[in-house]
Structures are given as C-alpha cells and as structure tokens.
Image (cartoon, rainbow, N blue to C red; front, side, top):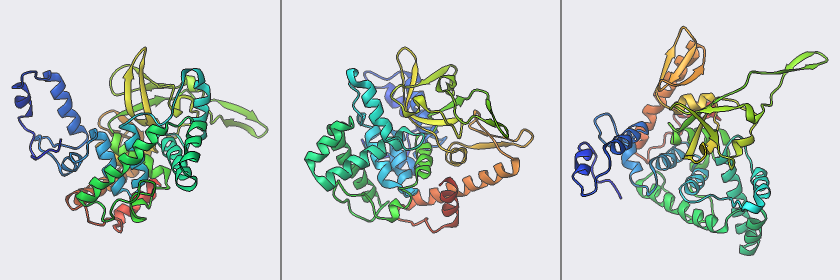
Length: 360
C-alpha cells in the first residue's frame, strides 16, 4: 500500500491496538530496518527517499535499488535484476540435471556477481525473443535452463516499475515495448558498466553485507623467484555477517566456487537457514564502491583503517580515506537534491562525474 503520511512515529502504538498485533521485537526490527536503509530518520519521519520507495510494490531494498538505478544511470539492468529478485529464480534447477543447470548458469557468468549473471542471461534470452521470435526464445530457454514463465513475468514487472518512475518524474520518456530497453540513452549511460551496476547493488542492498575471511597468501616458484598465487580454494573461504556465527554461500550462487576476490565485503539479496545459514543473490563490488555507497564511515588515522557502521573495515591511507569521506558526503548532498526534485539533471555535476568515473 502507498504511504500517505510523512510521519510514522507512534506506529508501534497503532499496531499494538490491533486484534492480532505483531510482537514488539518484530516491530522494533522493522523500524530499525527502515532506519538502516534511509527510509525514515531518527525522529521516525519518512525521508524523501522513503516517500519515493513507498510508491513501489516491492521490498524496501528493491525499491531503493530501483531509485539508485535511475540516479546512477544504469536503469534497464537494475529493473531486470530487481524484478527477478522479487519474483522467482530465473534459472531452473531440476534435481536430476543439477550439474547441467549449473553449467548453463556459468555460461552467463559476468564477474563476481549473481546479479550480473542474471542480467546477462535475461538480456541474451530477450534478444533472441526480439530477433528470432517466440519459438526460438522457447528453445533458447530450454537449452539454457531458463524459466520461460519467469522471463515473461520479469518482462512485465520491468515495465511496471519503469512506469512508476515515469509517474514520479525520474524519467520523461514514456514506457516502451517490454522487449525494448527501458529508458533513454541518458538513463542507461552506465548500463554497460558492470562496476557501476555492482556499486548500485551495494547501495540498494546495504546493510545486507557479509565479510569473506580469505586464507593466507601462498606463493609458487618460478625461474625469476616466487610469485603470489592469485587463485583461492573456495573451500578455504569463511563468511561472516554482522551477527556472530558463520554463514555460507548457497550452492546455487555463482560465488560458491569463486576463486578471486578484489574485496572482502559482499552484499546479498537473501539469507535463509536450513542445515546452515546460507546467503544468496550475491555481488562483490570494489572496496571503493562499498565505501562510497554504504553506511557512514569513520577514519581511524593511527591505524590507517576506515570503518563503516562500526564493523565493515577497509585499509586506506588516512588522507585518501578523508578524501573519500568528503566525496561521499558531497554525493549524498547531490543525491538528496535529486530526491527532492526527481526531474533535476545531476549528470553534468562534477561530483556525479567523479563518483561514476571512480567506481567504473
């Protein structure tokens, strides 16, 4: 439902008066989540971001992701991945053909990210649909273990989300046919940049973050001496969330057998507990993207450490870290202006240009 007030203070009292009220701890957790994503402020008032997020019939992280996709100008792929995350898995995984299904998914792998893999597979199937027709599309889906039903639903959801952006004023171009790219060239300036998309994923899904503890570096002998082994045995990687205890990559994730890490911190879309606590729908952005698009950062000058929300830690020279903090603050001010006036073009602003150039 669409929120019609800008203040949610007293919501806990309202909910407690219901015939079957939710538990106090559940309400507190939900309010904290809204605060964490920037939908409300410390006075429990809806922010400009929160008011825009309330227009979308999706979870708060997905709504935030769509808005960031529009602002960072990688709209079309972000609409794709948001629609998929909020619906059902794009890839089929029959029990008796699990290895074939995983191999098909790996064919679409595009960097250290389930989200980029989904975008790649979706675009490939959509292009076949558009160029060669429905029958070729069906065959492509069968050959690559892609769900035809999910594809059709994502095509429709993308247009639905884009229409809301159009009505709110983030784009002036009317929705196009569902097989076309959604948004004009300006709205998709960075749609071909995997790194900008990963930065957008971090912005939208934060604070759903896990930390990878990597094994000690090993070296191999060569004629000129020794060189560092770049590849890591996936079994030697340990994952931890903010809460105590280990978590694990879900076997369906592209990251399950990933051997190369440019950063320790990843964002995830889902967490589930069965025999273990698993995370799914994972992306690994650069450390710089994580510093710019995550929570508040504190620079510890003596140790050369930059801390985000008291637990996400990056090594950075203090002078560099201070510059990043100032750049982050400037971008957030620009972002706030855009939220107040969605039609405002911030792409020519030097701060916007610098941020996009750095993360790409």
